[in-house]
Image (cartoon, rainbow, N blue to C red; front, side, top):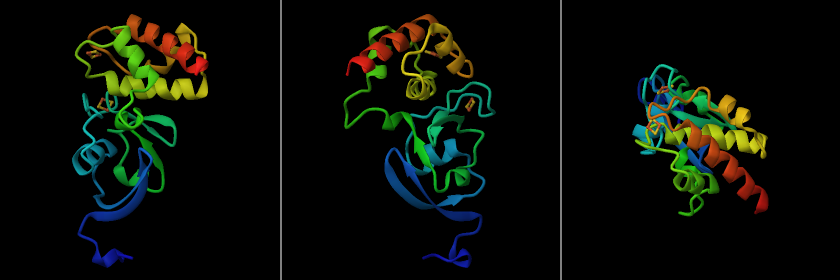
Length: 166
Ligand code: FES
Ligand code: FES
């Protein structure tokens, strides 16, 4: 095991689970979780828009709860489970929610989409049959500058029905 004094300056060894896989590495203690995911783990599906907790494009699930990964330090994820957009598909098969987004044209530029999907995934995990209002509330921290909101709601409600039939 690496001792504290063996570690590079400003780095800390952490272990966590990312998209179901255990990861152990030295992380720059100043890095945000978004930077760690994108730069160290090459998981660039998580997008950074504002980088100050305003837009929601960087949303990932931390122990099942949506967080703005630009406002969480990477070291805070030590010992925890992170789910990013890359973990939503199952061995290349898109999640029903992703299929529904495509079917209902719920994205235009797509920049908000990974964060939006992660907020909605958390919603469906805790409330498999949401109402329109539930979807609005669950995504009120995810801004879509393209204004895809009506189709995002339609896609979510459709996906919730299909998931219930599985
Ligand atoms: S990039 Fe994190 S909230 Fe905007
Ligand atoms: S699809 Fe462009 S910001 Fe949402």
